[in-house]
Image 1 (tube, rainbow, N blue to C red):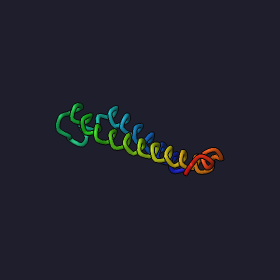
Image 2: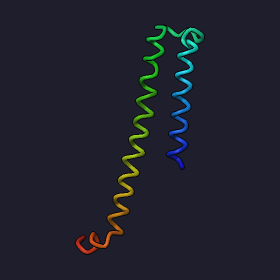
Image 3: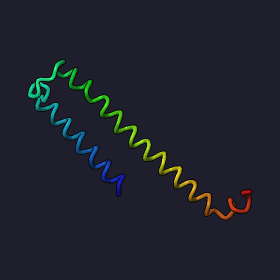
Image 4: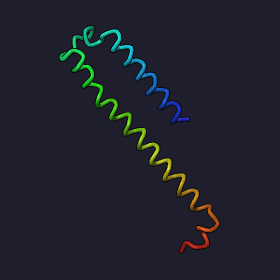
Length: 80
């Protein structure tokens, strides 16, 4: 459920950013650098969302593999 909420949140944020580019939000907010500055401000946002999603998938895959190994009959026979 948490994964769904996160993906929904990121999707809505991306849609907002597309719309803000269409409305030329950098002019409304008087940001320096015009469109280039506006786009450069989004690099850290994209990086953070990507790293959070990567962390979630790596931690969930480790959790699932350790669960499988503990409940696997052959793993318990050969483990010391």
